[in-house]
Image 1: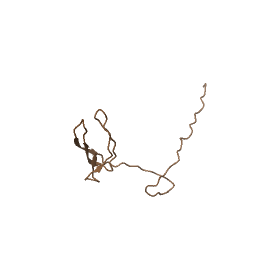
Image 2: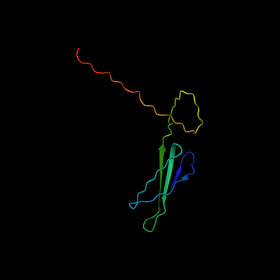
Image 3: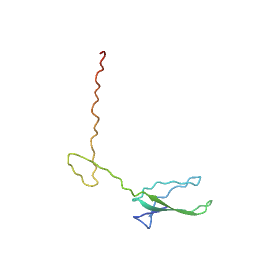
Image 4: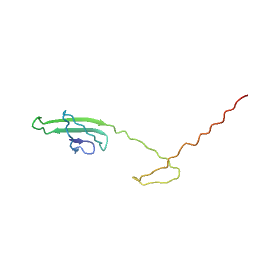
Length: 102
């Protein structure tokens, strides 16, 4: 199985997958970039099955995702640095006592 994409138009070999007894297979792949992908699958065949090949094109979104962090202490971190922030809980809730009568 190979995947051709914008970053590698010649194609990248993906790990082999097992064919299930019913003839189906599945795999998971995370392409490095969006755009048009061309996946080519080949099956060499065996004593009971003839060889086969298939090619499919699909489109992966190239829409950018956004993440904004607002840390008020002014710290700056280098790209790739893990940054954690302590969890804060909501302020305690106070309930006014009920009053009876008038």
